[in-house]
Length: 140
Length: 246
Image 1 (tube, each protein chain N blue to C red):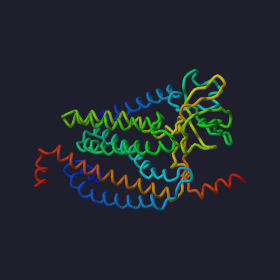
Image 2: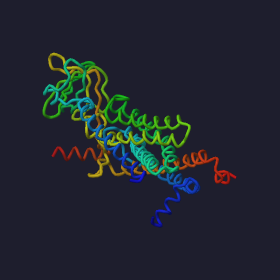
Image 3: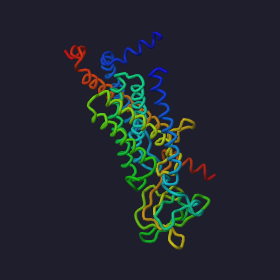
C-alpha cells in the first residue's frame, strides 16, 4: 500500500469505528436524551418515580379549565390521558388540540403538577386562509 | 493521469488559487446581494402571516438557512481537512481554516435566532432538547477547531491537529439532522424533506430558499476572501507573494 492509501484507510477506519461508538453510546443513552415521556409511557410505569420529569402530548380538546391563575387540562397521546395542573403564564401557542410539554411531578392522586409548560409547535406553516380551508375540510 | 485532472490540480497550488479566488469573490458577493434582497423582500412583504405563529414565524428566513449552513460548512470543512491529511496538500488546510469562522457564525446565528423565537412560541429561551444541544456542540466544535489551530505555531502541524478534530466532529452532523426523528424533542420536525412535499405555503418556501441561496453565496465569498488572506500570510516568504503585492 502506498502511504496515501494507508492514510485513507486509517481515516475511513477511524471514522467508521467512531460512528459505531457514537451509535452505541446514543443507543444506551436513548431514554435520557428524550426530552419528555408520553402519557402511555407514564401509564406503563416508565416515568421516574418521585423525581421531576417532563410529559409531552396533545392538549385534549375541551379539557382546559381556568381557576384564578391555575389552569387544569388533560394531556393525551390519544391512547392514555394524564390530568395536569399548572399555575403561571402559558405560552401563546398553547392551545387545545396542539402539542405541549410540561415539567413537574406526579402527585399522590395521579395529577401531574407542572412547574413549567412549553408549547410544542408542529412543522406546518400556512397562511390563515389555508388554515381555515383545512379546518373546514376536516369538519366535513 | 488524465488531462482534466492535471487541470484541476493546478488550482490546488496556493499560487494559482489566489488570483482565481480573487476573480470569483465579487461574483459571489453580487449573487449574495441579489438573492438576499429578493429573499428579504419576499420574507417581509410577500409571504403571508402564519396561521398559528403570527408574524413571529418570519425568523425562519434567517434561522433555517443559518442552521443548514452551519451543518453544511462543517461537512465541507471536514472534507478539506480529510483531504489535507490524505494528500498533504497545502491549500486543503487553508480552506478548512478559512471556513471555520463562517461556520461558527452560522451556528451562533442559528442558536441566537432560535432562542428569540423560542421564548414567545415555546415559552422558553433554551431547552436541553437533543436538537438544541447537538447544535450547541457543533458551535463548540467550531470554536475548538479555531482555538486548536491558533494554539499551534507551525501551520502544517496546526492543520493536522485541526483536521483530526474536524473529522471526529463529523459524527455530530447526522445527530443534529436526525435528532428530531430519533428522539422526543421540543424542536419540531423538519418542514423540508426530500421524500415528501414541504409542509409550508409556496411563497414562504420561496423566501426561505432564496435566503438559503444568499447564505450560500455569502459563505463562499467570505471563505474565499479569508482563504486569500491566509495564503498571503502563510506564503509570505515566497517570491510570488512578494511579486503579487507589488
